[in-house]
Length: 246
Ligand SMILES: [Zn+2]
Image 1 (cartoon, rainbow, N blue to C red):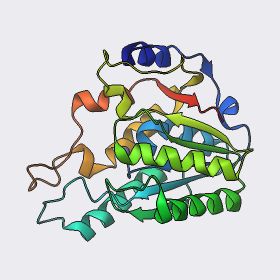
Image 2: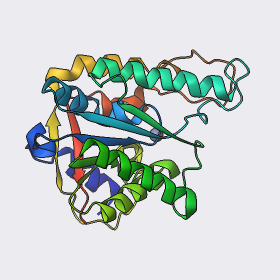
Image 3: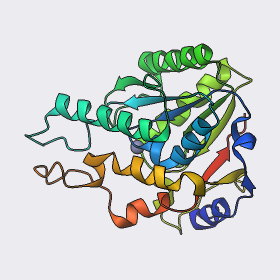
Image 4: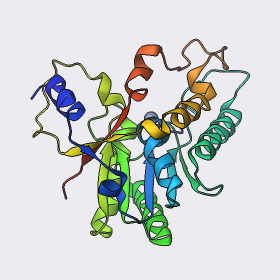
């Protein structure tokens, strides 16, 4: 299949419910950077919080790579800003005040193996055990970003330790793959969630990631910000979740 075929198939996944995704149990969302959780699963988090269901977000990297040359937001200030943004977004989505955790790994350098990878996996396993999570969400391994792919590997390693946990992947940068690129994948399995009831809250939560959505930090010519085109896949009426087969 080409990437275009796969992405079209994802958009055509059958409609499912929050129950189909997470049942009644607590769940954990792995977010490679502060914002992926909102973009890929903000509607789900809001919907689950309305049901009183416990969600925990683990942010894998420190997000310091978005504006590496800013003078007004040097590294530590940028890290703190992005933490404040993900916490503000989480509050809008209904996350508990202490339900965002940080592994603090360096942006663009999330490990895919070795001691720091193992430590990250252990930390995620410990959180899943602590909150008694039955479901784990992670960025899709096809996202063309090293941190997203590393986080997908962490999730698979977590499941090897917690074989009963259910694993779903949410696409972020994969929406912008070259559609003609060949993907050696079987047809995707999963479901799409109608997030209409939580749409406004998801919009507000996206906007809370001010450093990524606006020119707040305007002194780094290589600084990152979303454009209308790059943000478009996350503003629609559905969120998409792919089953990650064991
Ligand atoms: Zn990311």
